[in-house]
Image 1 (cartoon, rainbow, N blue to C red):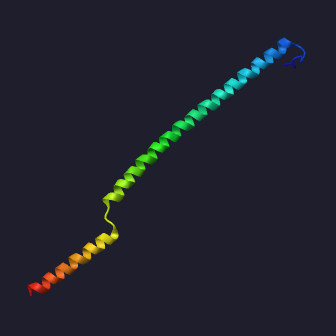
Image 2: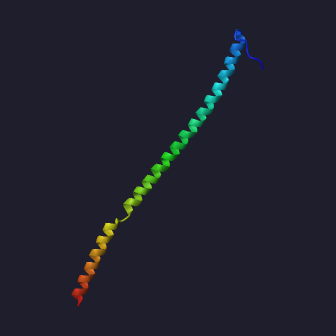
Length: 87
């Protein structure tokens, strides 16, 4: 393919149109890639929100270790007093 003559307006117009088409195709690819990234980001945000809510539910449902230790101590003391009183 030969170089277009810089003085030929038709050749310049054709070259500009070809460049425009190339740019439009490139922008379309970039737009598609960005749309995919936004979709994946939205899915990740939804998964994180779901995991956060499930983790909060688990944390609310569990007994803290100190509460279990206190309950065990109170139960042991009550059983000990009951055994002493039963003698």
